[in-house]
Amino acid sequence: MLLPILLSLAGLVLLVLLASIAYAVWVAHKMTVRERKSVFDHPSRLGLQWEDVTFPSRGDKVPLSGWYLPAAKDDRCIILVQGNDHHRNSPGIRALQLGGDLVDRGFSTLLFDFRARGESGGRRSSEGDREQWDVFGAIDYVASRGIPVERVLSSPWCRCLETARLAFGSAETSEALSNLFGRYENQERQVQAMRALVARAPVKTNLVLVTHGSTISALTGVSPATGEMVILSQGALAGRLAVQQN
Image (cartoon, rainbow, N blue to C red; front, side):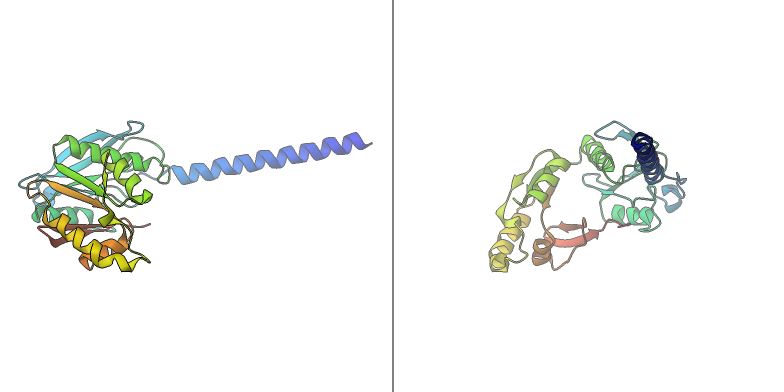
């Protein structure tokens, strides 16, 4: 009599397990399959020069599409990274207009579609895991055009150093870029050292500094958002570029 009861319980457990697996698969499908939105507007409407470009994602070579907006000198470039649910011309940050403003300030600009969005390849998103490969692919594309980066310096803290190495392949560490949060006794010394670095920055190429919000704020007076880029030209604030957070 006990055996039929055990078999019934085992069957019930198996049924619940299968239902749980099916639900997990459904949730994963809903999270990773995006409704592909058509790219609207065009650089020509703003009177901008543009190139239709295609390049592979760094990890799995998914083809990615975008617009490259060259500045007059085309010797430095900013990559605009869109929000999770948008294509290259994200309405949330008026990306194309922002790209035009950057070109006017002398910065070439790359706007591209993440995988499974806009006109890029791929059928599924990964909620950021493989989209980082897409960003690295965009960096590789810009580097292949010869946009010069003479030197990459990073805070010795691992979060910055790993980001710098992933994005640019290699980086030097500089104590001047260390985190100042809760260590404000070091602020005057580090700010002086950072000003010296910026003053020696090359004119015809680019110096990349990967550091912390507290350190950027001490140097520039700007309190950046997560992932925001602060741009200096000849030691003065030239612009800010924030990533839309969804």
